[in-house]
Image 1: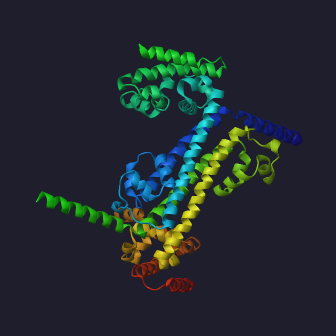
Image 2 (image 1 turned 180 degrees about the vertical axis):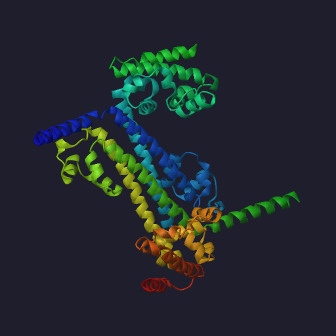
Image 3 (image 1 turned 30 degrees about the vertical axis):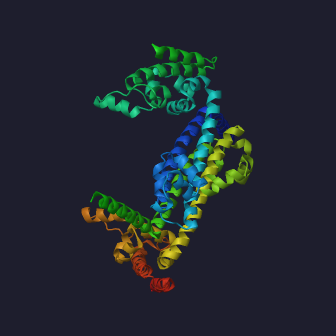
Amino acid sequence: MPKDFDELRKKLIAETKKKVKESISEDNLITQAVNCIDESDRTANTLAKRLREWYSFYCPEFSNSIASHPKFIELIQKKTKKELLKEINVKPEDSMGADLKKEDVDAILELAKAINRLYEVKELQTKYLEKVMKAYCPNITAVAGPLIGAKLLAIAGSLKKLSSMPSSTIQLLGAEKALFRHLTTGAKSPKYGILHEHTLISQAKKSEHGKIARLLADKIAIAAKVDFFKGKFVGDNLNDEIKRRLKK
Amino acid sequence: MPKDFDELRKKLIAETKKKVKESISEDNLITQAVNCIDESDRTANTLAKRLREWYSFYCPEFSNSIASHPKFIELIQKKTKKELLKEINVKPEDSMGADLKKEDVDAILELAKAINRLYEVKELQTKYLEKVMKAYCPNITAVAGPLIGAKLLAIAGSLKKLSSMPSSTIQLLGAEKALFRHLTTGAKSPKYGILHEHTLISQAKKSEHGKIARLLADKIAIAAKVDFFKGKFVGDNLNDEIKRRLKK
């Protein structure tokens, strides 16, 4: 009896291991990738702020003249202080920046290089995510875009769960906090969650936002069902439908 | 009169710019470098946790077997899954990790590379900081070490301010929160701030911690005064004194 029991135990463990192994799907990979993109972005921005503060000892005029972090980081690596000052029409003798030694500047530029690497990773992984999303859920990707689609998937937990959600739930994914505040305190109900990042919404008038979010969520709900049940590609039809409805 | 006024204004602006330029000292550079080291470390660890979670889809056994982030990152870049599993004596067919495609694994390894870069930056900047600290305040560096010395300097604001602090203040730099909690609520008073990172304290018995912190702060206060007034190097004497007093 104990021997049998041992054997059974071993079998069950092997079986479970196999199941764990097989349970890892595109859902998991997409969730990790999209979270990683978010985190790379956040850390790169934190470090970029530090870089700007540090660099502004050396050349404060240039640090103030340019708003985009990636552009700023690219330029300070490529050009010397003199060239940068010339670009923004400041005479070198007018600069408030200190004349740092080469080793001081090198320490700053090392940081710039590392941040650059983080931006590169973000880009590479965005491309990777796009590829995986297009293969795994082409319809969601066509309607929502790879990044927003992946975020919806990550919040829902899996494509299966997303596909079983009504469009009103999809519309509010990512706005859980505002929704529960609405339900408990009677504050205004949210109009959209993650979807507010969609270009159709961010480019529209504010009074239209709710309507477009509802429309998008509607089509994404359909797309998710088609993707989950491996239907044909209907993304273009859905997008045409959205365009048509928006024109009215 | 308006013309004179304009000229005066221009002169004063030029004068102020010059003063701003001259006001940037080693204090600022040290503060930036030590904060940057802290931040690189923190961001690298955040991303490393993400990497481990992601990687454990692929090879969970290895991710659990190694505690150090940098070592983990180095190994997964160098070796294949098979080699790694062999190292920890797990048969490949027993692994619970999924068989990911090459492009999935590549996305994970891209992140590993970026984190590696952050660790490298941290190392380079630690070396840079050491160099600047040794030149700017050799005595503090000798007693407290470059990293702790730089942190004290950053919290104090400048070498000038640090040199005018009594040793009891230096002892508690970095423990401001606990100190004010002590003063307002009567909670236990802190024994040390940043100094708790010093090897002499972390290696000692807990009952000795307060005594050693007091002793260290004492000598750092002397070192700061010598450094600020550009005295001779007395770091070795101070260290000998500390050793002698600890033996008693």
